[in-house]
Length: 493
Image (cartoon, rainbow, N blue to C red; front, side, top):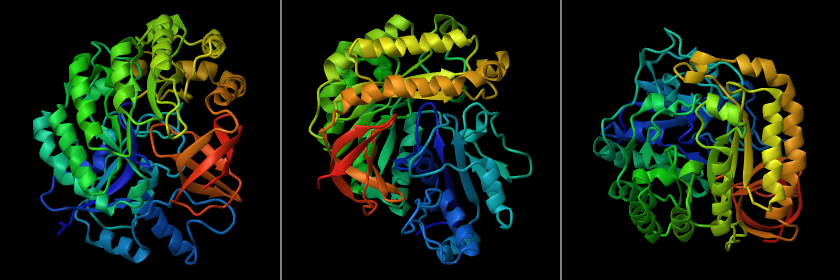
């Protein structure tokens, strides 16, 4: 039985935590868990699908030619059912907040402007929650954040809890919400292991220290939630929603192994991790992650800038030397190929443009460092380049705002193209040589006669196959070439 509360998931993407499909974020589940009876679930795709079908009654998500309409492909119900759920909603709880702007293959997060427009003609009580209440939201880097405006919502309701003991019953009760989510066989569930930033003073741009004091979630709670979700059909998980998984329980290797071994014993199809502070990466912890995780995982390292002046001005995680040593360590221990065709565990590098103190020389410094990685023969799964969004409340917002973005933005396109051409492509050729077989890829979207596929996991490589394959199914492929951030391949099964 459900109550009249309806959750509208506009998808979230935070420095710690991802909830954009194919990821299932924590926010909708936790909010659902606040209710004794299960709320109804809608995605932002449902509102778009409803409006789309009202305008074009014969519209389809995946037309026989052209592109898949990703903005509505994750809808949960028919237009008539969506309309009925909205009519009965009391209240409609809107969850929004992208604070790590990115590019997404098979979903598009909802912005405040969009959701307000879609809801304007509906007479219902609206409640807003999610990361949007801490600094705002912005799905594109380099722009000002969107902030909630007075009058758009009857209530702004922060979701807070004092301890993980307090959260646990909500997390377990809310797990049942995944039964209303589409395509769960091809989704990966984000699992919270901790919150807040363990550093005394965090990076200048980061919103995580604004939200919570540091807390770590004990292994019993994490394992209990994963077991519950597996009982509901979930099979893939990422240990996320923390600023650094290597810092779990203050970096205690024994506690890290206790958590990992118990999760691995549940035999999930995918068990991956996310963020790693390079300053915390060492051989012992890395060996534990490689031992218990499934192949293809990526330790996303927030280097942000290799320029020491920028690192100092923004209190970044690590020095140039720390970053290189962490990358070497993960390569040495996790750089072997697993049964799915991917390496066991590789580093990812995040570069952030527009930080305080940035100059054109910063771009050259960053390029030189990436070239050193390539020349040294190190493997990096992906180089993520973003323009910063200075969110209110952060040190960057107070000290510099968009000053350095405005000064240097004209240099970014040519520099990014150079990285993609001179670093990414040779790196991908090293990671995935022609002839490499990758298994169990999910077909996600079409573009003309091409199907784009990925494995289920943390930062999986995008693969283009020159066939129009059925979507939502699994295939094995053989690599035929590389593009700046993706592969071309032929289907073999």
